[in-house]
Image (cartoon, rainbow, N blue to C red; front, side, top):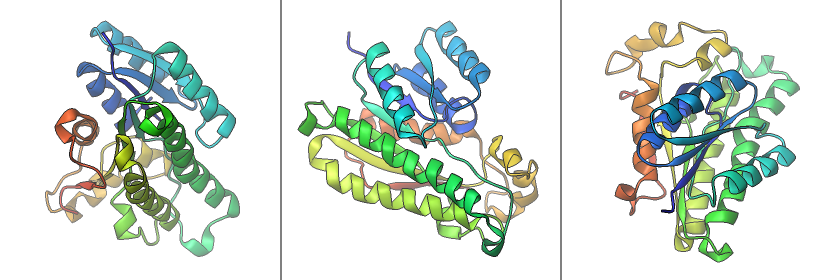
Length: 249
């Protein structure tokens, strides 16, 4: 029996890991991409396999085109033709005003969050599109509520990068809609993941929860539910959508 094949970038932790677990439980063969956290990625694969699923871990930095090409070739060889992509890999940085941001910070932010997503979307379309002999598929981009909030005095660069992801979603959805590919995005709000600690604000969700109409942060699993719905046949007439998973913020 042919099995749908899903690649989740940046899947060793947080939202990516939650998506990989849920998708595997729902029958996908999952490629767990990671940049540095080999231990976490391998542990996730072991958990998926122990639960009866099928998964592999593949190291690649999505900001490096050669590594992206190798990533997709490895998925082709080990799992089969791709039918789903979750562009989840991303970085944030420490709070700063725009007039304090270095060139290196900006380059890293856009190389990983934007160019990496474009490269992965390109390779996915080359495999999924009926124009290229594929049978269709679904792409879900992980944006952020920051794209519409702007994140002033925190990380306007991150917000701008996620704004670019929104536009990628809208343009690509129209470009490939007649080729069997649906393209959507989710915009998580304050979600309890390790990304906040990597930006120097480990208590950010707790500290800002009072600004959320629902008065709490969200979980990676709640975001994963939205992503896996967008990947599923139940969302067969849904493309070009930006789904808010932000507690009303």
